[in-house]
Image (cartoon, rainbow, N blue to C red):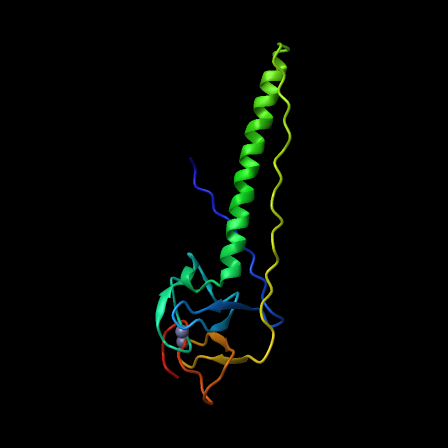
Length: 153
Ligand SMILES: [Zn+2]
Ligand SMILES: [Zn+2]
């Protein structure tokens, strides 16, 4: 079976920030949709701006995005089944035999919409790599860790 990839649309907020969630401390923060992408797709690693721990890009995806990915994958599977059954029904019926196959397409799930959180975040620019991050709860006056290079600014 060939590999299939799904493009998950992440809606940014009015400034183009997409919400991520730290798998360690559970805090959310925003990264610019155009900055998390690189030539190979998405960046490999993200540092949490709050606790400074890092992990794979995927593990920072918020639950709602994971859920949407599952829904999209499910619908893709249904689509494959529908196509298979449709073809099977056509083949069988084409023989004009006694056997008739009736085929009713399976229903797909509604894809839920993802909304980024709008609110009290503040945007920072990293002095080291010039990437941007939006943090929700600013404890001090300055940014803690840069999600891209991990520098403590
Ligand atoms: Zn964290
Ligand atoms: Zn940086």
